[in-house]
Image (tube, rainbow, N blue to C red):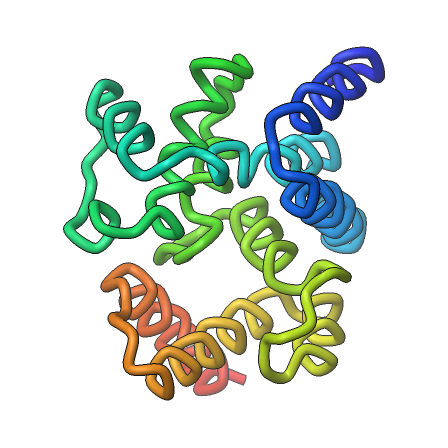
Length: 198
């Protein structure tokens, strides 16, 4: 994305998103870019995915459902009843259809930034983490620890975020999306295997 395209995208997002959501979007894009520099990932992809990760967040659930169904996207029962879950998949559809993104890695980073998924690419992990630790966040548990960890070991950070998220959801009695649980189990096993061979 060249400078002119970047500015045009930012202006369009500013007109589409609620102001607080727009500020969050800029913070996630900047954080994802910083993490990309730290881990040697593609800076342009990280910023693009960060800018577009919540592009569908201000849509109502009915509109998201129609858009995803029209695109042939598989929707779980949890997503069917939750805009906060479905906006990720709807965002990937919108990023492709409206914003012209064709890079599958960027689309997956948008698609899975809420729940994660087993076997995430580096870019997916960066956006997943950036969404959690961006400077405007202030209510997640262990944020100082998680923010430090983000620049030391991206895999350890992903696992910590998943652990903290599941712990928090358990205290609220809220339903846990099966993908979040599956992602946690995957990264927990990876961590155990890594420690076994160290």
